[in-house]
Structures are given as structure tokens and as C-alpha cells.
Length: 245
Image (cartoon, rainbow, N blue to C red; front, side):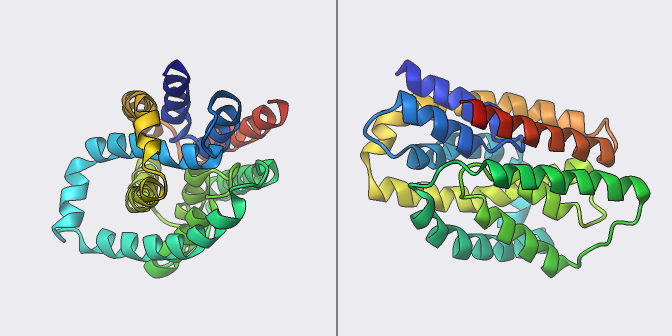
């Protein structure tokens, strides 16, 4: 049980950071947990941080569900369909793949360019549909262990006039329908996964809620170029950690 609590804590901390929680949890899960594919465990533990996300953004979600915010509903619909179309077949391929440090480094460099262009104020912007499409594509690719979902979607969403805290909020809202459907699929594939991993779901929910509040508050106090630079550094650190371990 303690091993699952540890995995849940790792998920709760790294889910909101561009360091690929899936990559790190898969890595530790391969050593700590026997009987489950580590990628499946890593993907399923997103359910804990999903509950934290729902709890934190409940007011925004109600507006989206009841179509009071039709723009965001359409954005999430497009990005979710694209993410699933790319992510599901890719998941079938990557279950046995090694961690993708190279992809994590690519996200880091992408965020470095994001920081540079925002500082120079020559960053081009995408229209609503293209922004949803790009975000959905990168979120779908993030099923590859090592490629950070939050880092990839934050990079995509930076092609807009959105503020840092708004970018974070949309990035995390994007995860809700995708994580919900993928968790349901994993549960139907192996119903014993929730029986074994419930301690990790609890710890990932609690830690995820605490770290989410901290990160959202921090994003409001720093300009975007510094914010993107910080996340780029975290990407590189995540790649180094994956390589060492």
C-alpha cells in the first residue's frame, strides 16, 4: 500500500509541471509495482489529479457543461476529439516503449522559444480553431512517456493573448475529458487496477489539489517569458532525472 501512496504523491506533484508525470510515475512504477504495466498505472493515476482539477475548477466546469461558456465548450470538444484520435492508437504502440527523454527536451526548447518571442513581443497568434487543433494534437502525443502533457499544451496555448494563469487553467481543463475516458477504458480493460491502486488515487488527489493551488497563484505573479523559461528549465531537469534513474 505504501508503494502506491508514493506513486500517488509523485503524480500529484508532477502532473501540473512540464516534467511528464506519466514518464516519472511509469519509471518508479516499473520498480515498485508488479503485475501491472507501468504505463497503465501512470495513465490511471491521472484520475486522482483529475478529481483535484474538477474540484478546483468546478465553477468553470459548470459553465461549460451547461453551455454558459459555449466558446470553451467548443474548444474542449475539438481538442478532445483530436487528442483521442491521436492518443488512443499511439497508446497501443507506446505501452512497451522506453521513456522519451528526447521528446521532453524538445518541449523544453519549445518553451525557451516561447519565452524569447514573448519577451520580444513578436509572437504570432492562432485563431480559435487552429489553437484548439494544435493543443489537441500535442495533448494526444503526450501519451508517450516522457512527453509532458502540461508542457506541450502550455506551449500550444501560448500562441494566443491568454495570460499565464488562463493558459494553465485551459491546459488543465483540457485534461479532464481525456483523462476521464482513458481511465474508464483502463478500468474496463482491467477492473482490478482500481482495487490495487486506490491509495495512490487518494494521495494524488490531495497532493494534486495543494500543488495546483500553489502553481496557479504563482503564475499570476510572474510575466509569461519568465514563466515559460522556468517551465523550460523544469523540462530539462525532468529529462536529466529520467536519464539518471
